[in-house]
Image 1 (cartoon, helix red, strand yellow):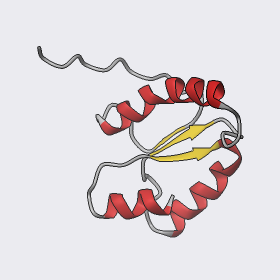
Image 2 (cartoon, helix red, strand yellow):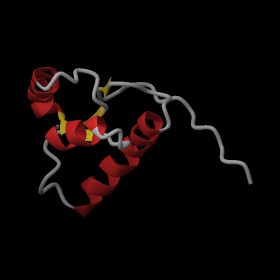
Image 3 (cartoon, helix red, strand yellow):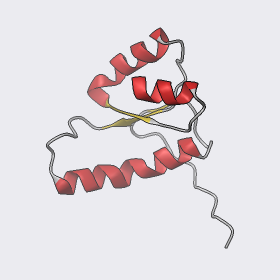
Image 4 (cartoon, rainbow, N blue to C red):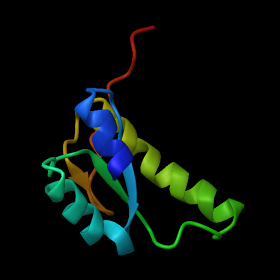
Length: 92
C-alpha cells in the first residue's frame, strides 16, 4: 500500500496488489495516509508459496483488473469478483 501511495502522490500510474486477508489493513493505511481512493486490486489469499500454476491463474485473473485501473475504466478499490469492463482495442 505504501508503495502505491508513494507512486500516486508522484502522479505515477500504479496499482497496489493486496490479498483479501490484508484488505482491511490496506484500507486503513490508505485512509491514514489521506488517500482512501488509491488504486488497489484484491488478490486471493494466500498467494505466496502457492506454486507456479496457482500464480499463473491468479495473474491471468487479475491482469484485466490492473489494466482497467491503469486505463481509467475502474477507480479506487477493486475487490475480487468485480466485473471488469472490456478494454478498448488499440488502433492498428
